[in-house]
Image (cartoon, rainbow, N blue to C red):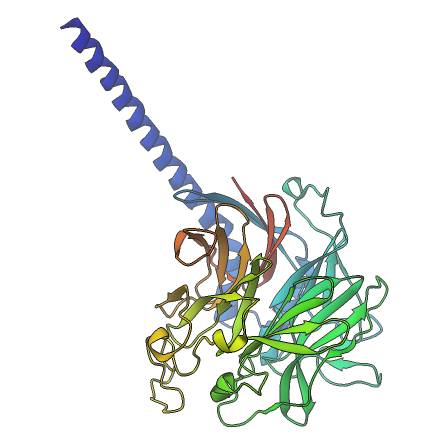
Length: 456
């Protein structure tokens, strides 16, 4: 009897401890949510002013300069299996198009699209490349920088021949952004050279996705064409410049990948002679390219799993975003992902198009199935990044403001599922791993920010 009394007492104590643990966890979650809401107040106030015409885009960009480098957010996100801490700092997104160093931009509709930016680690510095052509870097050695104990980052603007609005007097200027959709689409650094993908006006009102290159120089970057081609698409009918792709990925010191969207010329994605709607591999020495995969709409992100395996995010039609698994050692004809014949999404206008029927099964129609697709209309998938442990990887979204952690059943990545969903309340454009347990994100709130992410 005494034995059972002792067992009962032990169970009673364990029950009390369990209740205390749940109570403590509940209080932690409540505190976390309260802190999170407080930290979003600055952005929300600015957004409310903007929505109610209390502040215009020109004032926002000036505000961005004045808040440059200041910490805006420090939030821990508690997941089921993983928890994160994210610290965010404002970054200045105004384009400085004048050579005399003065502030120069116009408060028009394209100012909104100056916020998107891409991150690249160059030597020991973190560079940020904006759609507009503006280039800044963090003036710290990122390998030893103690970002956790600072409230302010120091950004330096790097001059270049990328002009944000229109061609000027300098013959070497590269026109970056003449509307809301063209400009820089990604950046990588290889062997002391900086490569930028961008939407290029090849001839009058005719566009494609090309690549620029410049020798690294901390005084001035002079870009010139590295990879371009004569094929281009006219801005007419259903043309959509935001469907340009442009993701760059280093394979080796001599090869890179480039994604090219279909610009809403949908049928070109199935044309084996066209570069549009493809992922291509470019030889760095010769400039020649080979098609790796086809049947793409707008590939936004790519990450290497190993030397022969690639994951890519596809910004699809309404309810049709995808994650695709691509092999680098089989013919591209065998890696046709079906667009615009097959898609689990639907056209935004709801119309049926015989040339783009969007049949729901890929495999039944001779195409490769995505390893995951998003059947909601609030994602807007963007970056993807391999976490390099437990077959996990990040996927970011624009419209949804979510950062996902996916998990694969095995190293072949045939079956994947969402492990965690963290709502960051911001469009997430890019992800880059800096070192062990440290990633960088670029966020596009009402004011853009650079965010440091680590696992807790």
